[in-house]
Image (cartoon, rainbow, N blue to C red; front, top):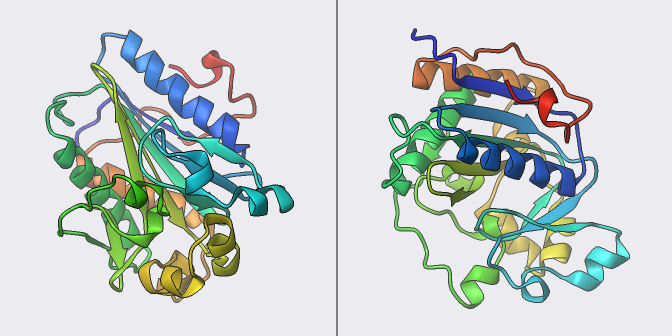
Length: 257
């Protein structure tokens, strides 16, 4: 196994949606300013049910704002594209990299595929047989852009038992990119349907969660350990730093090496 000292691992406690998006964006901007090839992998959760919408979505059309306000569910805008997601009992991953040797800047599809294959490698350690969606990505414009993320898979996103298990979105700057994605541990289908304004039956038909495809109890710590191992196995690397939880997420010196 090759040891790449430029791969860093970060594991955060449950934070607010605004803070989580700020951290991802700060790491992305920091890598853009450096001239070194570095890669960060981050795992995190959300301190309360939160809806995130894509960079290009229209807020009023992407979510049921009245329901979000009534239930005190925050809505945040991601720095990436993609469509609306309810983040509740889930694990979110982020990969931020400026290493063009591993993630070529001119090949978006290869980046999605490699990250999904690493995630699938980790999920197999949990007994989950996830597969990459090989169909064409839907053209997301107009009404399609405003529909929820988990209603349809994009190319190379992960499926389990034929239903979408992970939703991902990406943003590229000149020399680096951010890709983050949602892996549900459990899904509150009635709540998601209400907040995102879609039929519950359609959500149940199109998406799934780890608790639905695993026989053992789903614990976030076990999932993180498996995915960490999956990244190391697939990319042939070891993380340069031991897993750590940071209590002061917005101080750059607490997470930058």
